[in-house]
Structure formats: C-alpha cells, structure tokens
Length: 317
Image (cartoon, rainbow, N blue to C red; front, top):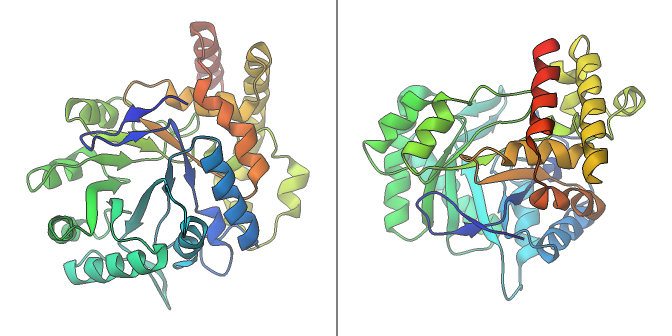
C-alpha cells in the first residue's frame, strides 16, 4: 500500500487507518451494540497484516474500553502501527461532557498511556472543541506533554478554521480529524483549503457514513439492530433520508461494477480523491470487514465516476 506524509509530522501513513469507535462496544451513550473483544483483536491484527499502519481510537470509546483492547492487541508485537487517540470527553452521570481544562487533559493522557500500554502517543487530538473557551488551555497542556515526550504530535478533531487559527498562534497543528463523506461535505472549501495552506494533515472519519454507504445496510438489518446501537435513531438511518441514502448506494454499486469494486470501496475512494485528505479512518468489528474495504486504497475514480456522483447529489439534496 502506498503511504502519505501526515502534515508536518514526517509520519508516513497508509491511506486507510483502522478506527475503533465500534470496538468500544455497548454500555455507553454512543455504543454500537455488543462486541466481542476477541473479534476486535483479530480485526486489529488482520488490518496490520494487510498494511494498515495506524490505528485511531479515543478515551471516550467505550469509556476507555477501546483503548484497552488496542493495548492488548498490540502488546508484545515487535513492530506496532502508529497509535492515535483523542481526549477532552468525559462520561458523567449527566452524559458525555466536554472537559478541556489543562489538568483534566494531563490526567486523560496518563490514563490513555496506561490503557494503551505504550510510552508515548504518536498523535494526540482534542476530540471536540467543547467548551470552546477552553481549547487554548487544553492545547497548552498538550504542548507541555509533548515536551515531556508523552505525546509525539498534536492534532484536533471537529475544529473549524477560526478555532484552528487560535491554536496555531500557540503551536503548530499537525492534523485535523473531521467527518467527511458523500453525505457530509461541510469541510470542503474553507476547512480543507486551510489545511492545505498550513500543512495540516487530514484524516477523515466516517467515510462510509457510519455504515450506511457500505452496501451492506438494508431496512431489514436496521430493524434487527439492538437498541444499544446509536444508529437506530440517527437521521441518516431513518426516513426521509434513508430512502435517498440507499438510492445513493445503488449509484455507488453501478460505479463499483465498472471497477470490480464494492460500494464501500467507492465511497472511501471518493473521500481519498481529495488532495487535502491524507487518509480515511475505516471502522471494523470483524477481520473480513477490513479484508473487503482495503482495496479502496488502490481505487482511483475517473472523471465520469465523480460526475455521476455529483449529478446524483445535486438531484437528490
């Protein structure tokens, strides 16, 4: 698999990285239903075997559980992939809250290091800019932790241009992790242009829109999902958007047939086509899911493919 340099880090990463939101399991506000840890570990190992050299996780996924699973999967390996994680979200009795005070960030980093069983986090990211007024304090704490050698590079997730500008005045941002897919294009133009101008790498999350664009999602499957899977009540998985989204999958299937590719591969390749995007985060709960999506890294869509998708989206906003 080809590699691309992530922003100003010097890290050469594969176009596809493994996301671990789903392997956090259930039992928290944004869970994906039951998940077997052995399946999760097997998925991580298979992704590495296929050339994926970075894993993205977060302290809030499963309230620490996803990081623990990643730590178990990587323990004892002679060569490990880059490990990216995120902080600034805390589970409370009132739900998930944004906490960006410097002391809280320092505690989160120490806890993530323990769960991941590593000495330094390759990329540490502010998960959400909430509360907005505290982002500078969190960033300053992260700079201090970087100087201590506990973090190698600093990134942000879900930030807009003005928020990134504020942090750039303190220390350079290495990467941005935004949502980006055929269904979520809000970062086009302003945000992606800014990242290109400032050598900020972009690792896009949810390129398959949390599974709706995989070609595997059906009305029957949605109805059989456990109540603990957050997608059951998400607007993209319910009417009126569901019908439009499944029609988009049919368009992806037609394009994929020309390339001997799946709808999921086409959806990810569409995200990777943008020159500002360094990589795409692909979630996986079972090894075969990684096996079927990895081909997106080598799929190049032609002008006709892009035009067909643009035409569909224009006619079905």
